[in-house]
Picture 1 (cartoon, helix red, strand yellow):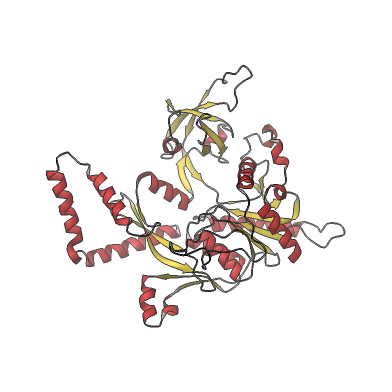
Picture 2 (cartoon, helix red, strand yellow):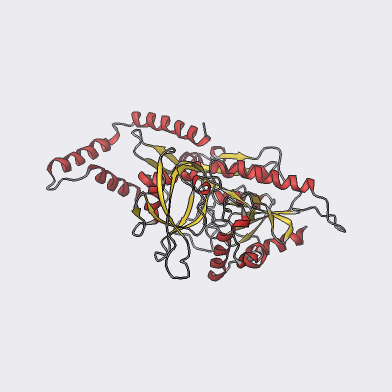
Length: 461
């Protein structure tokens, strides 16, 4: 059983016990049911009870922080898919930002039904089960594509570019069977011809990069495999002539744009690179009560590293930006406080609270509730409260001298370049997929934050 599911089960048992003990406290539940009953019996027009309940939940959670919520329907499916790193579907990354072009395939997922069927980056999804996508939102498209593994879906696929006559090439129908699609959360510098990742940074044979996009159930295992691949290449390679440096003499952990995920995954990732010491401390509601009695430190839940760190002889840098949040901030702060890595980029988001996921007993939704906040190893708080100004201490700040914030144009160029670079090759391999000339630009030239980190590591080596 996955750790998160075990945690949820224990939480359900605890919540059920507390609810039974407090069932009559203040009679709020009875009053709520009485109000709903009165509306159902006496209101002028018939009212959807589920709609009333959803509205009531919105009102309740509006009194709490922005990260607590009642999650149901498609939102619940997306949350569970993000954390579990899997879903039932056909395996397509899509873009619907330009309505003139329609729904465009960004990339198929390697090994997915869509990939096996030959669907490639740039193809257009014209219809799903005979229904045109012309007026569909991207969310609706995803909803129609996802479903129970083993069920079928029919896609009408159009070419990305019209033929010279100005007319679209004929569409083709592709029938697919949905499967369990496992998503990656850890990626490298570029794809190899077989779709696997190359960890060495192109043009920088002495540096490797590990990009973490989110923290899910399998993130730590994915990082371990990346570390093993990097270590294996180092041990197998001979030093270059006239040099005593092996390949991968530095490693970069890229957490830019990473909004977080499971705290447990972040703790495991930190443990991979640390041999000892505090990784993170969390404090919940009970800590404040204990603090009044002078026992605040004893009430903290402290997570510590275990023996056995990876790549200990390599200097390390962590890349962050304003979208680096939550579990990603835990990793950046931990490695920075222990001096394991320099932090390069711009100040992180400042989201330092932990949300517990509690399913309702009837399975109709999830309660996502802020139950604790975390402290970095230095015991400094990461969370930014609404009233705090920019000059107060929150989030993770780059090391002195390594602050860099790219311009909007630089960010757009990097995102477009990276999107093309991450595309999964067609089933026949890269030879069947002509590469745009823009991909000939090396990472250092298009990514100023990465370039700064590479220069910093070279100086420290």
